Length: 257
Image (cartoon, rainbow, N blue to C red; front, side, top):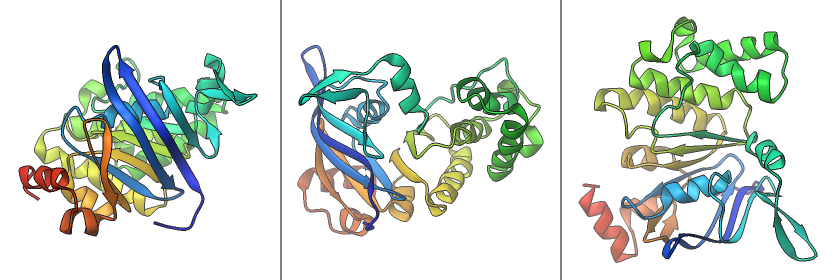
């Protein structure tokens, strides 16, 4: 943990779908410049929590702050009221998200995918957006493919474009939801390398992942979730070398780590 101010604070976050309670009171904090990896079995609530951070899912109880700003709501006389959609969209501009599936615009070139948000949403000058997009494509090793369309790229290349597209909005926080799970095994490394570079550059990141080696080597904080609760959290050395909870131990044995 570092001594910098929190970029993300989740306080008693609950989320249900009908009678199915997915999140049962999540309390987490991520400092500015820190990388948090969320691990745990499928169905434990990790991806739902990630979607709650940028209000793709509305929480039923609790509060989420990004850079001290309450996400999705405003407080008036001690009560929280839902923000208007336009304000929620403005908040989302500070939060980049990379999904399992790449969600690129298939009818746009790689470069057009990157400049669409800055130009259309942030009203940025096109020339400056193009210049920054090319720098980002160079950073993820794809500058030579700026005129290509998504269907012409491998899965790993598409995911690297998706990361660059999120970075083009200059977010304060990056969220990754199983970014390598849809990739062929031989393509996983190239995406993880980009994410490692991001982490080393000081980007604040929350990563849902089954890549235990990545979490071990890159995370400042590892959180094990199961059945909608945080079972155990701590530094990678603690979680992977000396977990305290039997559920954590069982999970790590099952994934072979």
